[in-house]
Image (cartoon, rainbow over all chains, first blue to last red; front, side):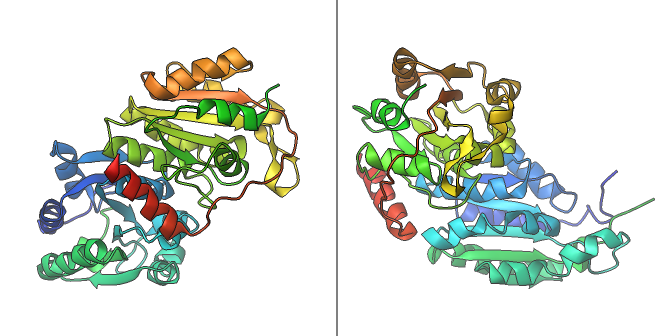
Amino acid sequence: MDQTVDTKHAWPDAIYAHFKRVNIRQVGYVPDAGHSRLIKRCIEDPEITDVVLTTEEEGVGLVAGAFLGGQRAALLMQSSGVGNCINMFSLIQNCGFPCLVLVTMRGEWEEFNPWQVPMGSITEECLRLAGFSTYRVDDPARVDEIVRIATDRAFNDNSAIAVILSQMLIGKKDWR
Amino acid sequence: MLDRRDVVKRLLIDRGDLLVVPGLGAPTYDVAAAGDHPLNFYLWGAMGGAAMIGLGLALARPGRRVAVITGDGEMLMGLGSLATIGVKQPANLSIVVLDNRHYGETGMQASHTDAGIDLIAIARACRFAGARAAHTGSDIDDTRRLLQSGKGPSFIQVHVKTDDVPRVLPIRDGHEIKRRFMAALAGS
């Protein structure tokens, strides 16, 4: 069972509120425990088309296509998913698409599974090398402010922006 | 076996306001050879991503027709996207695979379809209910009708000759390809 300890925390609702504020209409995701509350909010919203992906790189194409058609989109993924996207991110840089990615971190704070560490430890650097600005959030109280700035930058400037939702914020996976 | 340039030219005759996403390599050149158009979102990279760009576009514009025209190698790299599209069942999206069973851009090495890997069976399993092959000129006429008015998601594997045809190179500046596509879409 893939559940985080602190699902009772409401910080994903602040992200959802900014999705609504900037009129995000498509959300691509690979199912993820850290994003489970936000995914549920998106699925329940009739104005948002939720697209479940087999691999995160599909979401990069989705975001580009949505924008070409006049809709804003966001991607939700775990840190390991960033590695799956690297070549496809060239589409974002080559064409100047806005790209908002929310990354839940594994392999850092209090990680039980060492197999998550190699990708988790290079996630933020990979994103920067691929042309993203990254904003890290450790404190639930700062999610609202940081996601507001990230969404505005992505869509006002047609920028590639990743919000790094740290493992300190999400809480460690419960292995019991 | 069909000629890829003839096929694409016939598919795009009187295209109206069809939105076209050609996959990198030969399909981008084939679509350019059929006549440059601002509603072509030419890909020069992002291999494996053409079908998903088509999905994002089709979901954003349910009132418009979207055609992804790609090759067997590009489609094979994005097979998972067929499952993702199958979940959403976009009625306005068609995927045409120009299958020459080889990687033309890199020296004609055999692709998986040359060994009998069956793209139509994969597409059917991913809920492209009418997935079909095109072998003849009349199949291409049917395919053109599917792109214009068929109930999707549609998947058509077009069997084309392996002949190497001269490259026809459209614009490469991604910002400009995006800008003119969006301007044309806003104005049409």
